[in-house]
Length: 234
Image (cartoon, rainbow, N blue to C red; front, side, top):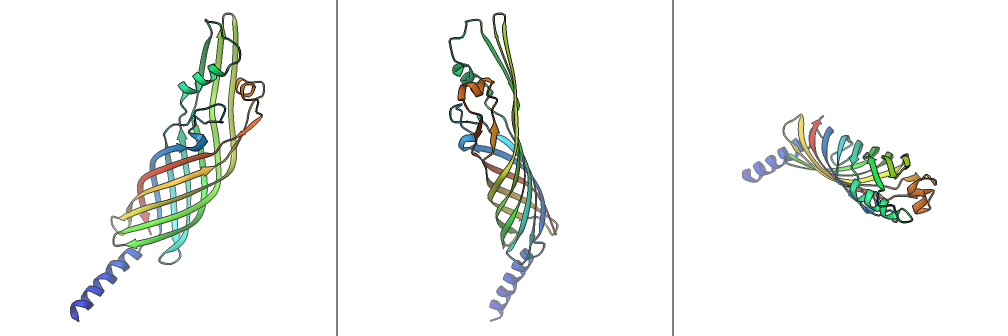
């Protein structure tokens, strides 16, 4: 009987230690893996030509009881486009045969977007670990890659500058593991699926507008974010 009581006491001690310091503020950094139309390399399919990028996240959570609470997150992400493939597709899509001495030079920036989101979180404590599951939604501020296009053919020159920005709804579903190093700090590993569908304007007089015949286009932006960071427990 004494052995059973001792075991129960130790179990309660482990669980109670995991319950303490349930709230956290965290800073993490990781990779952003594009998917859906965002990763497609096609002008006809409104592809974003996005490649692997990075994401920086500041997040926090307040747990109302032992398991359920509310979480908020601010993320900044950047994904470079496949500039070479985009340039090749652009040259192939230009109507009419190009003179042999035609030169096409394109300069492009990166996809950049910031997100502010909040929502519920469920945490399951186990020994020195916390398993977190969250679903957040909010606003996404997105900048499409600024680009400058130069086309030179003999004495003829063409120049086009293009950029775009939009604000729209976004959501993120994810899970994470916090390893509680001590009473104040934890190491946090998380994986999230981010989803948004912004709409961008297209210059009808520009190359892309004349090729696609579109004034606007919608893009399904999806990324899988894998982050590693540190969290302050309170």
